[in-house]
Length: 152
Ligand code: HEM
Image (cartoon, rainbow, N blue to C red; front, side, top):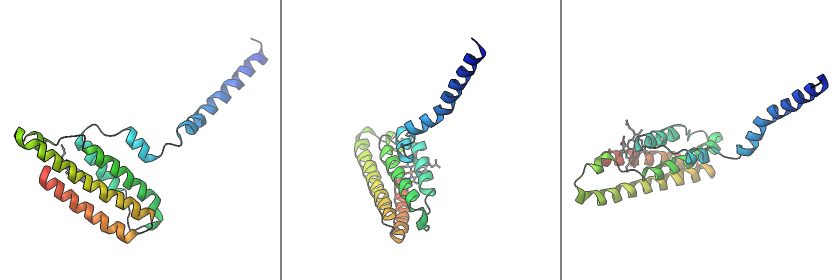
């Protein structure tokens, strides 16, 4: 290869190398945070609950300027709560076989109620109703105490 051909090669390679990250950005940039979470849901109940907790802690219900992020965190929380139904807590697995099915239904029902609160929370942020959002955060805290009292 003569010098000019080498330079052409180096130039073409640089363009490709510089272009790759922006291609990746364009190809994957439209995936939002909650979709990333859905693509990588935790593999255990413990980790799912931890992630639920992190999602709620990332919410600042007092600060209406954060409502877009708050609503997305609430969506993410809902996806995680529904995912928690894919697991059977040890407390239920340890019950006599005759009680397990009713207990799992009750556990699923409590998680559905928690997810419903999470959806209302996302709506409240999207409607700029931070007073309602603060009230729903309290209701979620109560739902957590309730669920943990019965199943943790
Ligand atoms: C706002 C809602 C909730 C949050 C933020 C939350 C958060 C958590 C966290 C952080 C843990 C791990 C605790 C630790 O190991 O120290 C946990 C465990 C657990 N939670 Fe929740 N929780 C919520 C609601 C519920 C509900 C509604 C239920 C049942 C219907 C439930 C059932 C459980 C169970 C069974 C465990 C033990 C999991 C294991 O380690 O195997 N949680 N939760």
